[in-house]
Amino acid sequence: MSVEEKFQAFVDAENKIEAKDWMPDGYRKTLIRQIAQHAHSEIVGMLPEGNWISRAPSLRRKAILLAKVQDEAGHGLYLYSAAETLGIERDTLIEELHSGKAKYSSIFNYPTLSWADIGAIGWLVDGAAIVNQVALQRTSYGPYSRAMIRICKEESFHQRQGYEIMISLSKGTPAQKQMAQDALNRWWWPSLMMFGPSDRDSAHSSQNMIWKIKRQSNDELRQRFVDMSVPQTEYLGLTLPDPDLKWNEERGHYDFGEIDWTEFNEVVKGNGPCNKQRIETRVNAYENGAWVREAAVAYANKKANKNTAAA
Ligand code: BYC
Image 1 (cartoon, rainbow, N blue to C red):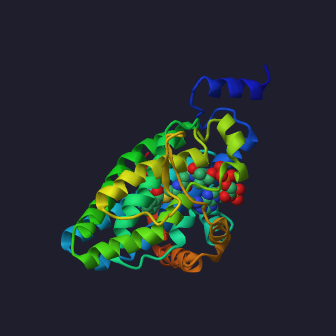
Image 2 (image 1 turned 120 degrees about the vertical axis):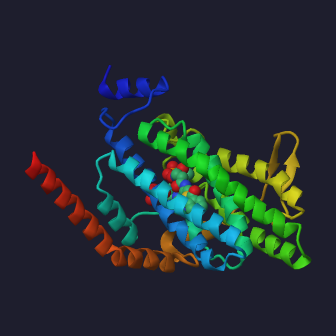
Image 3 (image 1 turned 45 degrees about the vertical axis):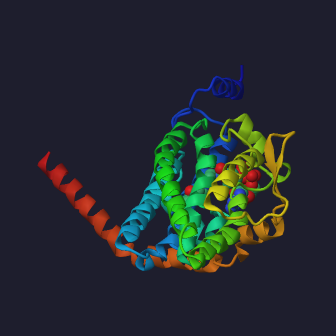
């Protein structure tokens, strides 16, 4: 049995690959790509919501949103650490994000125009992320899988806080209900795009399913999300912005309209409504935080020198 065949048999038996195990170059490469994209998404994902911390409608809402945005930073840290186990430096990953070489989720290139957007993001964006990440808990790479287990626990709280905002607004005044509907109209289609291109166009899916990095295809996960979201929308008394949405008895799933793939491709290429602003904000935050990193490194070095001198 070749080393590749042994690797595949090990994965097929549902074992986890660990950092020091042998792995094909392609496996390592695609994991670095996906985990880095995921880490960047968490960090860039702090921006649209961070925008509303100072404008949250009450102290309670402010405290909850602050905690949620901090959680996203924590998710980024777990994921950068998981990527580092594959032999890449965090500085390289950050550099690739800042230069535009590395991708992050398309969803974070849309603006948050009203408070209802914070509800819609928690409900739909975190909801879509959970559907994707629950599947990734069983991914074949151990450090990524373990990061997903922790992250999913926190995402469930995020999803509930978003849905609770949507409940309050949709059961509120007509103007509040209209705000909730408007946010749903703007976030629905971009949320479906989070799952990536359709299976026929997904470049990495087939190999990544064989390696069990991905456990379900983009379209399967998207369908699950649609099926889940319809009754949640009905409970809110809102309407999904899709005239083609209808229950298909034969398939046992909802049929839904065609995604605007031109819009998706444009956003992924960097031409979405907020791409430039998001990267500029990240770069500024990184540059303004340089002194904190330098101080932390100086402190760690001083401590290490003291310990060496004492030994
Ligand atoms: N946006 O062959 P495919 C969160 C790219 S954040 C941008 O199907 P793959 C949260 C893809 O990278 C949660 N790019 O790829 C945080 C590939 O490009 P390259 C974020 C996309 O990897 C704050 C190309 O298109 N979640 O929870 O097999 C607040 C072809 O695609 C997108 C993750 O990152 C996209 N939507 O499958 C609230 C999950 N979709 O690299 C919430 C982890 C595709 O060949 N990632 N591309 O140039 C994944 O599960 C997979 O990477 C994807 C794509 C399903 C996204």
